Length: 148
Image (cartoon, rainbow, N blue to C red; front, side, top):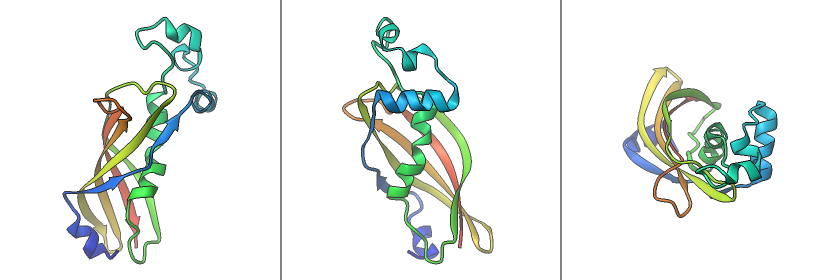
């Protein structure tokens, strides 16, 4: 789509990503990579004794999945040379994601701002839904820079 077409989508939902299963091996790998091996994430027996009733994904694991979710949803702009993560204005971890659950991202294009002649900042409201749960795993305002 053209940048003009993207500008027309401001204030609208862009769509939902596919479901992603959060299984214990993924959680364990994330713990190994980040060196965050808190028992609530990796010790299934000890985690069962907590109010969570089992292991949960790291909040940052769920947050890190935004990139793959966005790749499934965000449109490619005609002439686009790159799109990079610019940061987050806010993020809140609302509900834990238990091992074995599935999550997906919901993307809403809040604003498109021209940074310079060929660079645009996208401000998106994102929520990550946990399948069959009332509250999301997280909500965030995410910034992406697109260069065309």
